[in-house]
Length: 164
View 1 (cartoon, rainbow, N blue to C red):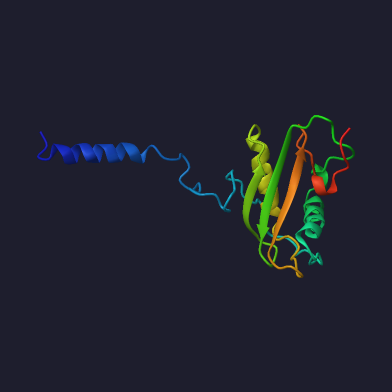
View 2: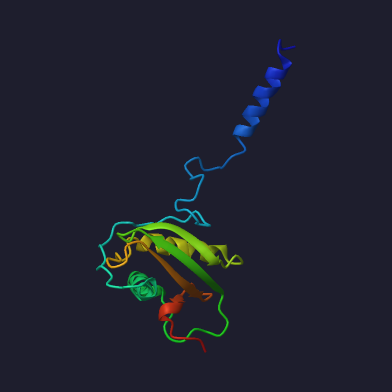
């Protein structure tokens, strides 16, 4: 019998709890960007610095940010009018610093039934960083609605061609 049975039990419990964590020890414990719902990360953060935005208001900036997303995802943009029934619709606010780097995200309407779409939208935003620097307004919050079909193609509400 051990001299300190409580100590032996505590060590056994600690050893057992050590195995209860993530199976991937390199997985981040917190999201890389505040407000992010998934653990999506950018596959490629090396890219060209986009042309600065001359937008005078956050509403004007929406077009520059949407075009920036479209430029990097040409093969994923739904061509033409979207079907009347979409797989997922989500509205995301993205807070950008003065250089267009993503500071945080906030889902105003998350497509919770489609967590893979949430992750893909977040990854797409992170890969697009830096966004055009809003030289006239500095830090900016870009809000847009993502319209997603079952095949993984999308349009942003700012540049949508509408629905059938």
